[in-house]
Length: 126
Image (cartoon, rainbow, N blue to C red):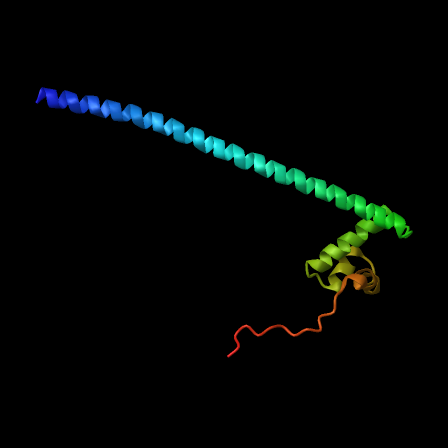
């Protein structure tokens, strides 16, 4: 009886040690995986920043070549108006918020409005 109890105690101590070792290995593997995800995310962020920088340079080149003198304030104003319009604000609300006439807002967004001549598809056709 004493030998059995001693044997069970020894086996339980051995299993406890093995469990601790496996747990450490698992956490090391999880940390490596987290590090890999972090590195790949940072690379994606870097790539996105590079593409944004290139787009900004392209826009600057296009505006310089088009010979349209637009001030920085005017460009920001147009960007804000287009952003509000793309977020489905009404022309009246945009004009009220920016304190300009509705005709000015219509003139700003006119080149960016696409006409929808197509019908929407019926999803539940019989």
